[in-house]
Image 1 (spheres, helix red, strand yellow):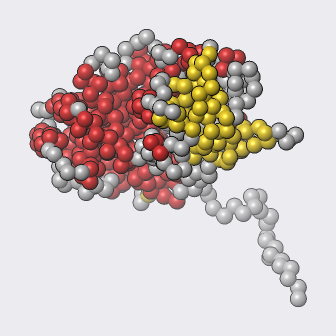
Image 2: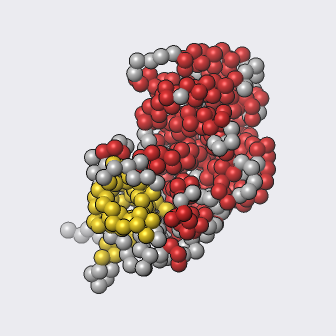
Image 3: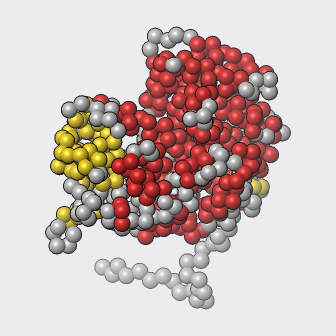
Length: 562
């Protein structure tokens, strides 16, 4: 049987093979914008709090809209890290290969001081300004946000410890040096954390890894570690904070990747995690076997030591989720404003406009809430109200921003339809990324438990939170009634933590509303308060009440004009 098929000859040859239709009405690329200059809510807040940081924030904001930087983000996630346990001669190597785009992004982030500005600047509100940098960075690429956030916390962990002065100095550097060398020979250092074990998860008290004392010397108290860690991100970092059991209990130790004599430490990468998102960043399972380490702080007080770093990493994940939401919103707005449906731009269709306005409200509130706890962090050592507020509000905002990010991204992806679900578009990458921050540094349940623990252990934390809300009283009758009710709930005594999520959700909305009333556009702040604190909102995006502010809310949120 002849299976050869001949297509009928045409009268004229085709000039463009398979030119079946004209490509038109596709959304315009979201490029050529400045994520800081074009973000009215962020830039106006910075002008109030830390105007000295405007130039450096604008510089990083321009990178977010740079097409070549966006392409580097795509490449770093498309070409994932590869584990090389051995070199070609059979020697144990325990290293990870990254695409050049990863190193390009790491260099950009670290040279922009995303990790270090809070510690390197002499200007006021350094933590606030660094948080704004992190917010912008999370609109560029989220995998790199892991090492920048860990370095931010590590600098505090090294402070006041003479044995770690060189580590602090190299971690502070506005530079990136991926070479595998002793820290003294490097221009800059990258720091990681390795805490979680198979049997313990978030319960660090279940640590099984052990450490035995070897000697005291020029590098501090030296211990030999044996055990495993189930999650270790950035396993090519120059050093790691970790936990192990010593004679006195769970202790914090620091593991250099390369020993002072230039030899490799006994740090064995078992495999890389195949993750849902955060694909550019290598996360791994590791084992220690007689691994050289330095004691950090007091023996037996390791969990306390690590928790002293956790405030900063939790802040950074709250900020990171807000930044991720802002990027998703920018993509959705750009799509809706440059693509037409039913004879007009999608952004002008009443139902779509309501959705976009609602997303814009949520994004601005998430940013303001996160930067409020960054401002509180600036006052940890100097202002009692700010210290107490930071203690209770950090887990509140970390819980809420990280909790909302997946649903927020789901709605933004819907705006873009099928195009948003295709992996070559950034919306799909953000959708896969969004759930991660709620797991890192404590799940949603852990954050809610921590809020209750803070208020039960020190009632002044509860009163500081109520006092913070009182600063916005008189600006909205709905806000006043809602926060009076919340104050009563906070002062009540509950038998267990089964109520915690409901209570902390109310706290998050109230804090966001307070910030919107103080720092936002009056009409837009009123729209947020009416929707989030009254009983009419349906808890589904796109269910805002009819308001003349809807169109202006959408327009105000756009960082690019088509």
